[in-house]
Image (tube, rainbow, N blue to C red):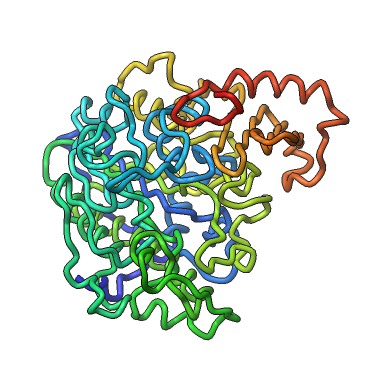
Length: 481
């Protein structure tokens, strides 16, 4: 399969507003489809303000459901953000605190005994699947998708190898899936485009699961639009070339890092980025269409979000696209641009269409939300709060006392938000750490540091920051840990 030709894009409100086949009534629990983009910024969707291209299918989700304006990712890079999401814990408690590469491939694994949303939903009778980038433990380790409750997995196990969109292999459960046309004998970009192949497997999972009497949960952590910048030569990229000014990016096109984490060269980085997000939008259209064709759209919760803020790698230019919207910072920052992400939730008959909320929520809220949905009691060890009352428009929605974020690289970084106040701690392992305090209500772009002028607020947030960080010897954040 080379690529998906001419996938039709849903117009805003199109597929979701159209009359779907009658929903199946055998199973009562709603299906859940969670689409997680990779390094997609707040401003990379037209329903969040993107001006240089449009995302009509994702806009259609926003028109049919609830758009969140204060949603936060787990943290500012891939693996720990995903760990927060699937375990219901913030980055000061979660098992995976950084992007640590291990031989032979893959990242530091989730530990044995970890509780995940996949375990919860499997126990509640759901068929579970994950399609895309895992990054939480190699096959055969305690972090293997199968060991963490994933019934069907297809995609990249290793997020470093996921830098290549034309890899030499993927993983189908525990079996290596070799892509025989992604070899040095085939010009790069003319073999199998992995996201298209993964997308096809995801659609197959939906069709098969929808025809059973069990509800299903599909996690779709796509690699798009993470660098590298490349798409198949089809109508999408052809429609964008020539629309923007371009500065070619010169990357890794051979040698030991080729297909092993290096980013390829790209003559048209702006056009290619727009084409990648447009391709993701077509994937979303196709997922919605498949749910509709199988008669399960009316009984399916669709969630769309991104794992962190926009990146600056591989020729990407988030400033040109205003990818971080009004927020300061990018991926790897604990400023708002690195951790505030788009989130849309659609649930026909439960979530009000075209609604918007400024409720402060985060990735570690999803696990307690799913637990309330399925009737499973949440233990006190989770950091999140269920947002089910908010989604259903009823009373009883609990709010966070505060949110906490940490990042292991770049000398160590932390942030804590309490109400409008946000404390940022940079250079934790340096001899001259920096503290900054912002009032997000008055200064959403984090331009005016109030640390010296509001010592009362700063000291309270410093205490919260200290309490939230539980040392993990595998991921030292502070000196001496």
